[in-house]
Image (tube, rainbow, N blue to C red; front, side, top):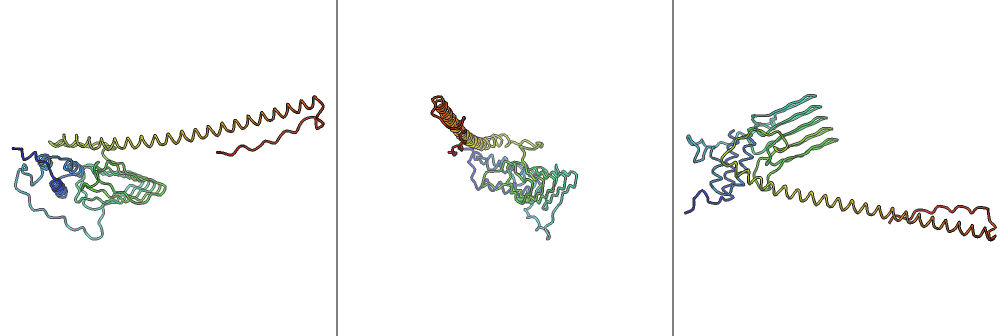
Length: 299
């Protein structure tokens, strides 16, 4: 008889584990990086045993010691007035890293300064993190774990706003970082783990197969991106060669036109000298130079 733990996991079971992980994050048991990693692992799990490994150290798991957890209570409704926690740097630098709690919306202002927010080790209380970032001749950098969805909006005037994050495949219920950026001669950028200094992470029993499958999935995506870049490079190269060949043909046509004109002038002078020598020419001592004809039209 087959081992029940080796039974293939269903989509409904994966979504149930993702919901349990989100509840654990709201309770303060998981950081944003841990939530993102375990959510990705849940979607990559192939069997029920692998799904069970992801939640072994969380309440409600058969392997978790201690009394059963209390019934989950949803977080209180947000206070009126849309409370927001602000981080500002005016001709200076502000950094927020390490363990911290994100309960309210976040506001960031950088005026001729730099603000860095590292959300990887933050404890989040909701599935979405809302940030308003304003940069006036300054820089705002937001570091998130790879695998989250990033929604970047706003306006950039003589500045730049960009996202450099490896996002999750479409259709997965992963955390969302929503950023509204207002940039004037500055920069707002959101970067992922692959472009930031790594943080210390704990290795679990599910980490090995998760990392292997993650590398396979991202390897396929990276391969597709490399193929697209190679095709684009080949297209640009073909266009460049076509333009160079066109310029070469135009240059050759002009050179041939000038050679024909020089041959015609030499022939005209030769005929004038012959006529002059034989006494058949009664004009001025030298023939008037012919006017330079226009260049042939471009093809």
